[in-house]
Length: 220
Image (cartoon, rainbow, N blue to C red; front, side, top):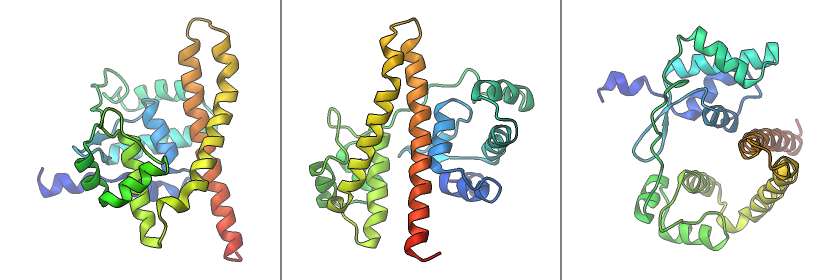
């Protein structure tokens, strides 16, 4: 990749910064949710980093505007995007996304962690390997903990965060249980979509509550 092409790609954090001025409530979890719903399709680096382009930013701006101004459901927005953006590949006939499956050494390198920290994360149940491989969420956890370490926070300090996440998962499970009990055709797909949207909404709520609490701590 040449220098010009490299500069055309942005991280999810850079995309968030570009959008938050116009959409203060947008979060990284919201962007990930819209990706999971197939409305955008960023590329991935070999180590699993999302690589966004200016087209993805415009797509996100379009989606967020339609939700904010017209309260449209995502399936309607997706159809409108197909017309507005000329039915890009991200919305139809998407190629299979490469699954993140990292060895222990690859995870340590990608997240910038040492062996002691990773062992501590596993001891406290914050991440785990499956068949000796680590998936995308394990990588996200490892990177987040690595960033928090700059402030002196270790895995043992994050047990409250894990407990809160487990309680939120319980809320999701409780909410989708009636859908699964129907055992109707398509119930599993409906429950899956509801669970993913609920997860994104709870993450946004959690983030807003944390920001509010921090402002209180700072006396703002």
